[in-house]
Length: 253
Length: 288
Image (cartoon, rainbow over all chains, first blue to last red):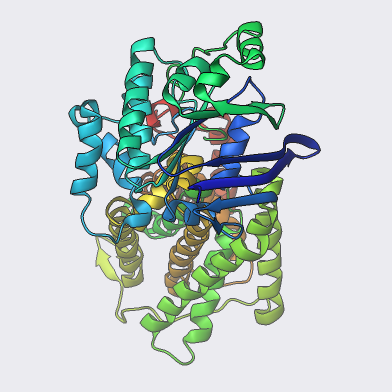
């Protein structure tokens, strides 16, 4: 039974349809990447699966269970954690407070020490900066923090939205390495990336999303050599963006 | 003119404005909107206490005022603000103006236009200091404001629910991502804000009476207090409230009581133009 299965998911902003009947699944312990150009609907897809946006049409199953009536908090409680685009850390709070808020849904489950320790083992840099305000961290450190915060929620499935955006190649390497360690710890991972070739190196399988539809899928090996993928990525160039701070949340004062 | 008397008056009315200002700040921090029915929530609390006082001792009646204010705040959120969640903050803010008119009109229908009084919490003659008199109820007002400051600060900094609300204030989207029920927190913010406003509205009745329309001016003065505090800090809004109290009471004694409101609201205009970000130099970039 897949850890996460999405069937016929559609989404529109007003009359603009951005997702049109998307189907994909991720098996337990897999890393699956959703690649696609700008505007393909990748971020919307993750936000609907995580219920940051409302699920209006389609089905999302977690280990075979329908989640149609779940709120965003319910999804977090069921172990589906989103690491959003642009990190979205709590800039005015310390690193450690950010991590503790990641444990919000599990606040009655005893002490946080062991959870913090697990994050700090994976990202020793965060331990060094635990008292620092999250807003003062570098882009890469904020990405570590965003992943660490999701780890505090005891994820079974982690959705990551463009974790490599705006990071140096070395930092991308470290983040990807952390993701593969997380997988070894039993976390199922869905990775949305524009940096398709970095994502395909890490992932077991991938889907190619274009203008709201899945237009291709297969093993990472096959996708990396797929003519459509090569056309999409080599034809329209990879847009890496340059926003290293990237913490400005949408619609915040 | 007795300066000390003006100071006493300033502190006592200023505490009321300060708590109402804190009510604005709590709602604004967590939801991003301004609740213009804030003053009328104080009025609801005051009349809640007046009604409850027919059956309960004064202290309990004032607590009842807080409960009424809290319920009114919650209903305001559930019935008016939340249903408009997809219309944006501006529409949600405008509906609070409508709610304020509805509350005021309801109060007028039920209670008429005459003023209502309550017994003070502590019976006794005002304290006389150097020719100025300080009613005991004024001490209660200042004390309750101080107590609310300590309690609210502890709540937002120390409890998990309070921290979750603060997280909504910093980044609502991210708060949702970690599994905080953002709608529940907004409802809680309206409830807490209504409760503290209702309480202070009730406690000021022995000094200032309760009338169906006193919420309008009170709400505007609390709004000035909140602006003075940068609309972000409970403590600063309370300080802002006391400042408004000082302006008002000194304007009344040195210029004219008939112009005191004009001067206070003139201050609002000046503030909105000159320092819309509050008296402190905190900028958004320093907060984030």
